[in-house]
Image 1 (cartoon, rainbow, N blue to C red):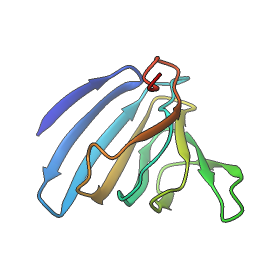
Image 2 (spheres, one colour):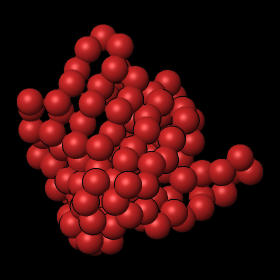
Image 3 (cartoon, rainbow, N blue to C red):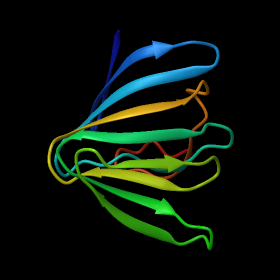
Length: 115
């Protein structure tokens, strides 16, 4: 297992192959990830602890807020803008295709948007 520190918490990469990636995201209360999309990466998330706000782009291009609790699952297709925010400290399992660097940031609280 490999731990990667992030400004919103950390991630633990527990599976990494040429075909898929498995992570645990630990998101601190009040912190949020970038508003982002992926060109190729497809992911599914499951909240295991705490509460999470997931903003996820719908078919019409609008961001829709989803309040997720333990046991809730969402699929995030490629090219859909999305952002996760910790309502409480939370733990999220993420499985995805193996495209770890496929991130297009639209906005970011930590200055990680390309200039």
